Image (cartoon, rainbow, N blue to C red; front, top):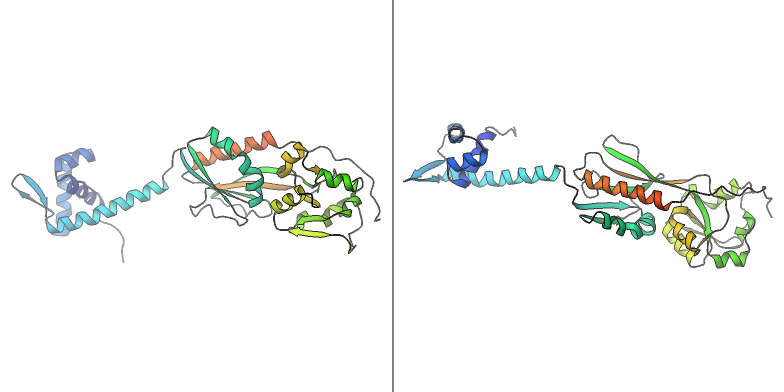
Length: 316
């Protein structure tokens, strides 16, 4: 079955004429001559084999067939207009839907978002937190934020921009550090050890990088959490030592509510990326938001200090 629409120009002219009930007014709206409107409608009537207008005195009126066609065309052109509006490039003003990992959104982005609203008060940000990658090509999300462990492969229709590269460091509360008297890496084993359920950021790797024998003691207290957010909240409450991204706790480190329990970070850094559809109609506000994110990173992420060197220690 062919879906090709014939005489599209003529149907458009007829639709306007059916609304104005005047060839002259229709010609003014279409910015053409009255003769052009008359010719197109005559072509359409010849194609259909029916009259679409008739005159009652000095007035133009629609025939029953013309009335029926006009109703269908009004719906059709309205649908076309909405379709065109849905994909055309939008202005800077409007709504922006941003989705990111729960820990990133809760710990880093949300506390800073008010500054973006101050700069771009014509853009309304709808923020979603999810540990599942959202499809930015489906139209429900404009910008996604994810880490390098969960980023999908590069696509031609997607823009990916690195946002943050951060050390993974051991952190704990000052009160816990004072009780344990941390000095050697093995001193960390005296308390509750927290880690995320990601094999790249676990204590086993950290201790191996310190040239310490693998941990075999059954007396060590372990806990595994499924998000950075959960682990950071635990250590802020004074429970254990946690390996986490430094940028997520930079404010707490600056304020002294958390401390870096040992100067050595994991060799494997964590990276976060923004990604969005290359041909998104909201490109103007997307780029405004991504540029602001990068400004926040530059302003708030402090460079890591050189780690303090120490001699490898034997297993106690």
